[in-house]
Image (cartoon, rainbow, N blue to C red; front, side):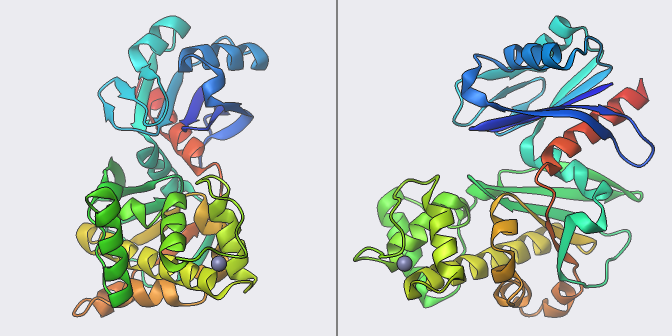
Amino acid sequence: MLLAGDVGGTKTLLGLFTPEHERPEPTVVRQFATLDFESLEAMIAEFLKQARQAHVDAACFGVAGPVLGDAARLTNVPWTVDAAGIRHRFGIPHASLLNDLQAMACSVPVLRPDELAVLQEGDAVPDGNAALIAAGTGLGEALLHNVDGRFLPAPSEGGHADFAARTEREIALLRELIRLHGRAQCEMVLSGPGLVNIHRFLHPRGCPAVRSTDDHEAPAEITEAAMQHRCPQCVDTLDLFVSAYGAEAGNLALRSLATAGVYIGGGIAPKILPALEQGGFIDAFRAKEPMQDLLAAVPVKVILNPQAGLLGAAVRAGEMGERS
Ligand SMILES: [Zn+2]
């Protein structure tokens, strides 16, 4: 039996999977409020008790924060996660931690066509690399290096790289972000809080369509107001977001030479799929002279499976179990 986890700042998914030929199959998956527990070990103990499962062969957890060997300190959660402690306490022979985006990247090779929405068909190069970009609470980016026909997911902290403004309006937004924060990181534009930043910038006198001011509720209100055309500035907000998202996905494709495909993960993309399909995303993705032809051939797909991170962690757990 495999144990997988997707540990986020707000919610955590834990699942038991059986190793199958094509990909691990879930037998039970539960969602927990992360801060209801004092540690990941306490949450695992509760989950295994509920699931009446005492024996686990291999475990892997994607965590929202940088991973150093067996340990990870979570961003936004006062926990330190320790894989050695988990191996010892639960008698699991193999347990490891991955950065959450690296875990999601592990799911990419096993995603099924009905779990993906195609933004650009392209023409995949079989021995090319792939890449993953995911806007949600923050912005995550991961690379899938193709080594001898096999994808090796590698983490990054690309969301904290500098925001590359392209238009007069984005340059004005960049100036405002630098004035407020000292520097403009990609995720200050491309995330839920990023949507709120753009919205504030384009609505200096407030917005009639969005009541919420907090970073959890406001992004969904903004994108709904935009997609229902209830406020012109909300429409502008979403347009700027979609175009900047496509441009950053294109930057990632160039830096990783992701000729096998760019995958769009995270919670925002499936909610704004009609806006992503309208063309602004792919126009910005391709508009990188002299590399337009290369980028026009890159398959671009949105991940629709909301549990891709958990599935990826199970894939990695299965690989560790196989090697033993
Ligand atoms: Zn508005």
